[in-house]
Length: 468
Image (cartoon, rainbow, N blue to C red; front, side):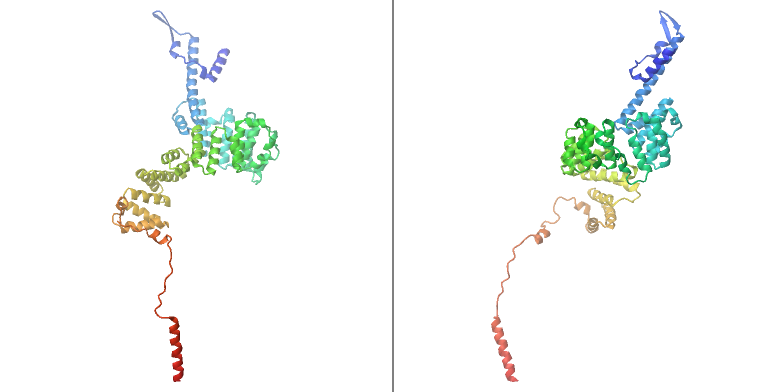
């Protein structure tokens, strides 16, 4: 029996290697035309394989969910978890843990902490897997006292699992709890970076980036053994350090042949700083190809799509961008602007109406301007006049001018769509009065000589004096 339990434990933990057994093979043994009931050992074996297959299905299902989380398809993973109704307690604990991770990644820390606080998660044996995430949630939610207590218990329970003695997490906790302006320099006071290797070296490189202490590391890089630069991750981190310091050439030399998403993003940023927009756009596309949910890539590709007039791509990338609930109207405004540029005036107007109704007519001036333009293009004079008036009241001179013409011209929205000229002979007044022209001096035509006038004046003076 003990041997059977050992086999069961091994098969349970390596269920992916188990064969799919047909449970009906163990109910009844058939010989010829007679059927005999199964023996007790057969029933035990049948129950064993039934449980084994059940655990295999759960493990496969959870494995798919984990795959989606790792690859950034969080909504798909969340949907699968919320639809799962498995009563198994072990599966429920993993389900709640995965949901807490998803909500943490999405920035919903209250919801993440809620799943970590469920009664199923309070079992002591699961503390190692949960306490770190619980501590992070408490820190972010400004529950400093609870975070300090939680981390104190967590560090004792998980210290043997950390290859870097929890230096990173301890630094975060110290930064949160200590009101020390020099707290960012503390991790680098007692280390010589040239003496660090492997995980510790990478840790301090990342910490210097996170804390903005690149100068603490860069000035010691020349003392590092050249063997460390065979590690692509270290080269990527060094390239990022140089990029942060504005040394773009050195940064590019370190990451030039790397293919990771971060290195592609850095190369894209370098091209962007040089205003090489096409090259930058291509690099961010490569980064997005290697990491489909790269928010850094998406945030840079949307304005580049605008600059390069890639309107459809811009809308597609905007849809992929994760934004907070408070920014949903800003996202819709950008989407409407992109649709306006691609001349999808109907689609743009639908998005703008969502903003107007959702914000209860408290929309931004940009929304009013877009609404005015799209209404003109759709020949909707009343709507154009309404939003031109709103924009004019927000000190928009162009819309004040437009409002005047909407009220002055008959069928103005129809007139602006006419292909023929409104005036047959159009005079370009601006060019006429601003172009250079040659000035010629005026010629004076003399009718009476000035000298004759002076002589007559003198004679008149003499005559007056003689009369006296």
